[in-house]
Image (cartoon, rainbow, N blue to C red; front, side, top):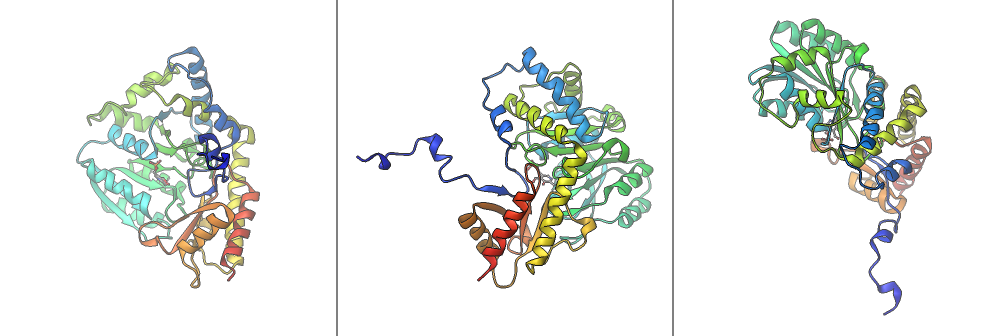
Length: 377
Ligand SMILES: Cc1ncc(COP(=O)(O)O)c(C=O)c1O
């Protein structure tokens, strides 16, 4: 039998044909050193060597979050960190206000309802941002009612960036806890957690952190800690107390995903070496290039207002002459670039170009050029 009919060994099968370039809003491409970090030999999670990884990771995460409060790491995706925030600080029946502007912010309302909270929502149409005025009205209408307000910084399903700084001030003035989904904003957009006074802020590894999925991060303020001490929600795995005790000893409460932590160690060093202001500026530059380029191609942006446009993902409406599946197939099959489609009611209306994490102007130019060729009849 000639050699070329033999089954491809697994190592070659993964490199031929080349892996497509991911421009979805997470998972993102991985820097080589992050990939190599995951190829290291096994390591004991209670060993001094792993302790050294944690000694670097915990403070580096605090730097990225702009906080002196603990940032817990969960061996679970971003949704788990949100659930951890709720079950550690709220009790059944507590009133929660969720600002909804898309699929992910909507998920928090579903979660709070499932957990037995009394949920109110303020919902805006897809592509629009939540407003400070509607939040202020809702808080004023029900004084001392809400125990927590949930905000989504970058709504990944639409590409909206909510202006959360004044909203956080309104929430703390009202005396409620703030919970902020920063899954696609942390590491892409400035969000100084302590300066803006956010209580519980979560993110995920497969986004601005240039890592595979599997870890999530959650910062916990002193107010949130006080709420934890009043909370009688049952739970073990996500119990803040266990994470705090372990973190103070540069350890973890349960068996962590050791190789993801080693990848995180590497990714955080890359981010801090670049410098967070430079990381944010790079993302803003990518956003601007893609928004301007799409407009020059005659395409319409879902988020028309630059002020509310995410630094992580840009939603572009499909033109009348070509549908979303055809555009995505052209980008992938001819140019080796994967972009996302819309979700739910936007499924066949928009493409979403992810430009967070390990991406540069080179990739922005590449995707725009490929898009132009795909759209040309
Ligand atoms: C804004 C936002 N929130 C929450 C999530 C859920 O995170 P995960 O899929 O890591 O659980 C995502 C995932 O894309 C997201 O973009």
